Image 1 (cartoon, rainbow, N blue to C red):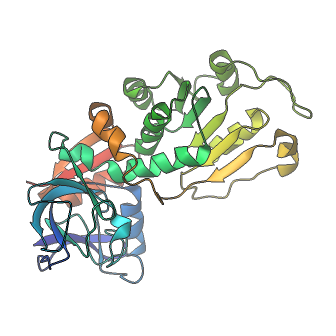
Image 2: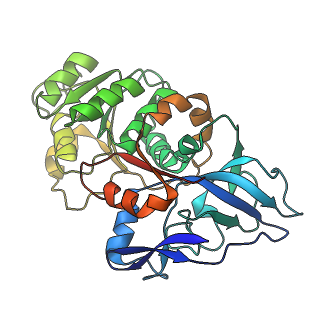
Length: 339
């Protein structure tokens, strides 16, 4: 079969490899859709990731159809549709340094256990939507880290795929009012379509004053100057220095800032000025327990999740899809589909 691999710094190729075979404790999955993540471009630039530098199989956002089930495996049948936990694979994280990648026709789940390595989903859920499960788990982990709950007010910076996933998870948690902030009108329009209560274009509007209009004004705290919005939770899904800098300047006492975004440059922080705010700065990475927690919400609201997908490519155009996804501003969520 063919698989897309990083073959050197800045280089990806389609490589012929052996199709995997399921043993008595394994499940063979025919890949039907796989999303492209920003880390795929990062792996390519680095020439792979250890221990597979120069030969890194790509694709870690898969959904597929079960083609073979080992005699000792329970909880799944041939023909079932499944979402997959890439991090649980015993031969390394799928598409992120492991022996297998999901930009291929098949992967095998070794020593497969239902609820650990895979989860069966209803067949009416489109494979392209099911393949959002992995990045949406990243978004759900950020929301879980925030502690956001019923009746609170939240802000999401960045209306890309993770930001929209954060929005959907916040609403699933019962957060009262969610504002999405971005600089691209098209992304803001999509955020409203997905379910944002309001949006702000930070190029055209003053973020602090607009949030006070939307969330009300917080009581004054010792050492803080000027009116501040009563926002409880801020989530940085943008990864630019302007986001934490903005939050630090307007945050009310006791609010939380969660950062799932990858910041590629250092951000200067005046901790002295922040002291009386008692802000909680919380980092968020991956999905320690959320990979299948988010699946129920995707199943229940798959049409909203489908809006996150911006571009679709057939498997034979995976290299072109990767190039588009790596071009700044050219696409949001690119999905590769397999026949």
